[in-house]
Image (cartoon, rainbow, N blue to C red; front, side, top):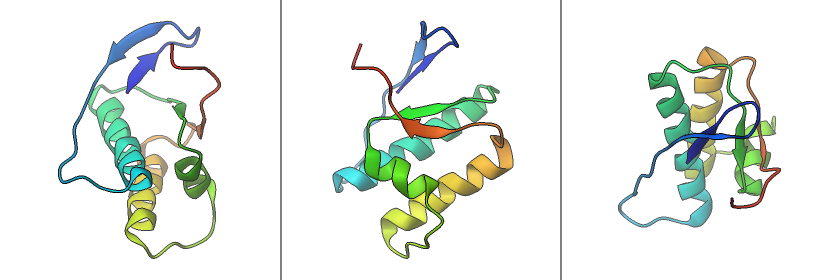
Length: 98
């Protein structure tokens, strides 16, 4: 994950590994949860979160209840945002991998 400023300029990066291996969409949701925690610990906000994982973005922005493991992680992300990032967004990435 990386942080860019309002102009898109690189600021800071972080990498995490998850063990055991999991399905991609679950790993991507855990990545969002980790990013939320990271920027909170850095006292940043509001922050717009851009992901290339459309399923995670759609799940986050959905009003539907998902009672799977994936849905539980997404609910944790939503709760985190409602507590700390009310004026932030979770959306699909507008840029390539640069």
